[in-house]
Structures are given as C-alpha cells and as structure tokens.
Image (cartoon, rainbow, N blue to C red; front, side):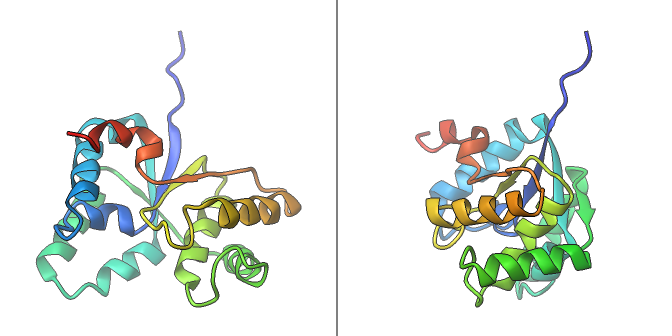
Length: 164
C-alpha cells in the first residue's frame, strides 16, 4: 500500500515564533506540543520572507532557536517570485489583506503560487478570519490557483493541546 502523501503546510513567521513566546502561554503550549507531536505528519515550508522577519528579531537567542527549529524540522525555504509579489499586490488591492501588512500577503501568495495545501498562522486580526480567507480564495480562483486552507495550528491538529 502506498504511503499517504503528507499535507504541504506553510508556516507563517508567527508559528515558529510562538514556540518561544512566553507572553501567550496557551498559544506557546499549543505550538510546542504541535511541533512535538504533529509536525512530522506534514511537509513543512517557510519562505525567505519569514526568514527576513526572523532576522529582524532583537532577541538573538530566540532568533537562533527559531532558525535551529527550521533546520531541525527540515522546513523547505521558498523564494518570493515576481508571480507571488503580483498575487500579493492583488490580495491587498482587493482588501483581503491590509496594505499595511505586505509580508502577510507575501506569505499567502508564496504558498499559493507553490500550490501548497495549507497555511498556518497565529494572526487572527487580519488573516485567520472568514472575510480575508474568502477574498484570498476569490483571487486565487480567478488566477487558477487552488483553494488553500488557512488557519491556526489548532486547525492542523493543535486544538487538543489548548486545554492541557
């Protein structure tokens, strides 16, 4: 019997960062337990945009820990293409993502143009909610990209860890 294909999951910068973020203990616990118990079930991706955001962190230890996590979990690093930049621009012009948050639009666009299955974010303010996701799907369908699942780690198996 063939091995089941893993879901190709893109992680926004907020996901590996949450592993070390003590200011939100429940989110941190869910993230830590997810990486311990669920991460191997997925083919993990991150992008140069995320790496650039990580490089901007002031906490040198946290920055190195996140980079080690990326390496230890064999995350594939995706480049940002002109196609992704154009798609991100459309997300912002259509109101899916605020123009003040281009990196978030880039994350979604990079995952979309690479035909990944899903994206995990811990950003509930302007990504992980119904209207932005609906608008992203409309833009993606218009350009022939597949519908991409967008949610927090809770959607990808982490929900059981929120009540420990």
